[in-house]
Amino acid sequence: MGEAPQADAPFGLLAELTHRCPLRCGYCSNPVDLVGRGDELDTARWCAVFDQARALGVLQVHLSGGEPLARKDLPELVAHAAGLGCYVNLVTSGLGLTPERLAALRGVDHVQLSVQDADEAGANLIAGVRAFEPKLRAAEAVRAAGLPLTVNVVLHRLNVDHVDALVALAERMGADRLELANTQYYGWALRNRAALLPTREQVARAGEAVEAARSRSGMEIVYVVADHHEAHPKPCMHGWGARQLTVTPDGDVLPCPAAGVIDGLGVENVRDRPLAEIWHSSPAFTAYRGFDWMREPCRSCARREVDFGGCRCQAFQLTGDAAATDPVCTLSPHRGVVDRILAGAADAPVEHRAVVR
Amino acid sequence: MTAPDAVPRLRRGVKAAYDPTRESHVVLFPEGVLVLNETAAAVVGLCDGRTSVQGIAARLAEEFDGVRADDVAELVDRLVARRVVDVDG
Image (cartoon, rainbow over all chains, first blue to last red; front, side, top):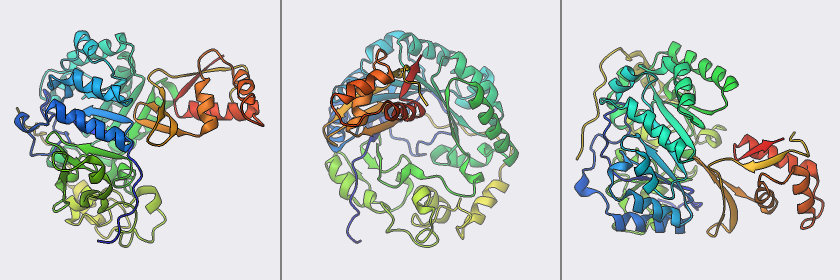
């Protein structure tokens, strides 16, 4: 390996505090091999991770999971991250987010609440539990606390036709922002891909519905496109090891939440090495940083500054080679793989995510 | 463009801060960070819900040379587009 490209400081840390979660969504991007409670980092270790992250340049800490409220020490973790001057974003299912619980989380700057569908039956079906009503109460608690609220909906074949109703629901919940994010196929979502993939017609209608909603709604509406239906790949993570890092419940440090799937990446752990060293010089972070790793058609492509060659994990999952062009790209010699995946989409039951304790 | 008598304020959930790592003023908001140059930091510091665009320009003129209300309005426009700032009036 040549000399590593100089890395800028990261802005964000995605802290996956736990894989435990009361929901069992089949679109979950957590890995199929979930980390159990016994292997989770303890309070002191997470606080040390936040210290190291802040010193490295991290300004935003996304407390996620799984369900971060499953951690009894969440108030301490929030307070520690906030005390360092970080912007603290709580990414939650909302289950268990009572006004009392929220009041104990001093230092949260913003709450991102997941919603599975616009109506109770559909939402509970996807979540695998009765989660709809508690989420409405959680949204109320967030509003009552005066915190900004983002509602996040992962879109797929079963709910992508409900954009208008989802916008209305998010408005009723008092959201400042609505994220409508088409499913990205990693972890459990990859396993359920055929049943989650929307049709081309569904994707086209959803795009139009989002445009119309943007022109009439006061909410900021963020739309993440269905990348398999696109001609060019997503600018995954704005480039490998460029802006954000992920720490898994057991302390692995990843350039993106899905990167654990890439064989031989050389993932390192916060228990073994300081975060700054891992960010700047570990093989996992330097492997695809910058542009030197690229081959054709990316290497000479003007779009490389736009999409950074797409997603390394997707390239690995679909071609077996993490250094290949993301096969979503119509310039990739492997685009046929994606077209065959789209052709294989079908109405089928979605397998729920496993329960981990 | 934002009117000279408009009054900008930071939106709910937006925090202005100083980052010692980057030695820069920054704005933190849901899912985003803006690293500010000296002038932008001064403008953001005056987006207090009381001072108009004209007022901000006048205050900045005490510190910096050649500050025009139009430049301040343009910067406020960009902050509004990034959903960092709201404008009253």
